[in-house]
Length: 360
View 1 (cartoon, helix red, strand yellow):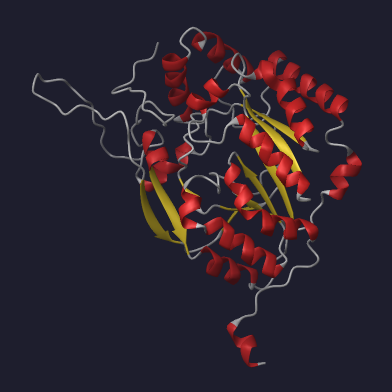
View 2 (view 1 turned 135 degrees about the vertical axis):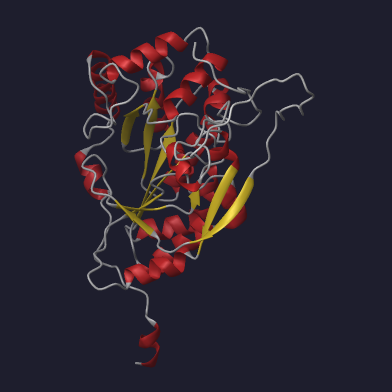
């Protein structure tokens, strides 16, 4: 088993330690020198700092993503999902991708103003914005800050299409806006489901909504006329893959009309963080899970190649893909006619009035 310094299970947190920031010029190591040391707390408070946004949209040209632009109101995520592929990005802010990612958050302000400026740029082409492409825009901090709701209000005013993905039932707070956006064919939502096992969820994704709450969220979105699908993500070989069909069945019964899946991704610091979590919470399965993952990743912890990073390769990955496709056909998920009806309207977009227009 790998050795990790100061590893500790903390209530409500996913990571068990803070790996060194890979950009830091120095490294520190805890050593017991025999002198009294203050005990490491088992509970950690969340600390939020503010960042005035200089731009709103993040752009990508990845061939395996369905969007080319995204908007992230927050850096870091209090949900604490141990597998989160966004953890390594916290290193860019001189913070650790481990416990810091869950407890030292950055809230971005001024996003509506910056987004309005980008909408008014000459040559801006309207296509759906993904909220969020990195961390969950409905993490607990949103209940206090309300940044996502303000963005939705602005997008509705501008008739700009948006897609959202979340693990949180907090999205129901904005059901009024989402229903109106959906009526205008400007919004669709995906709910991320990982497991129906509540005990597993508590350690794997400690501050996310329960599986029952997520299914109930799908029901209420569907009832309000909001197109809603499910993303089974991540599929973790040897830990959650046996639930694939059950998750799709439950989501379909709740009202989901589309589905996708993503194989567990372990880029950079996520691999040792996830392996440490496995040894702490599921030591009897750790070796098997990591072995299966490496079989799907060409022998390594991760493969970042386009076309491989989301699905993996090899016999086990192919088996998951076949099971997913078979279950979707049985349940009528991803029907071509339904998919066409879910296409968002980009023709109604109207940029916000610039200051000069006020005098026209």
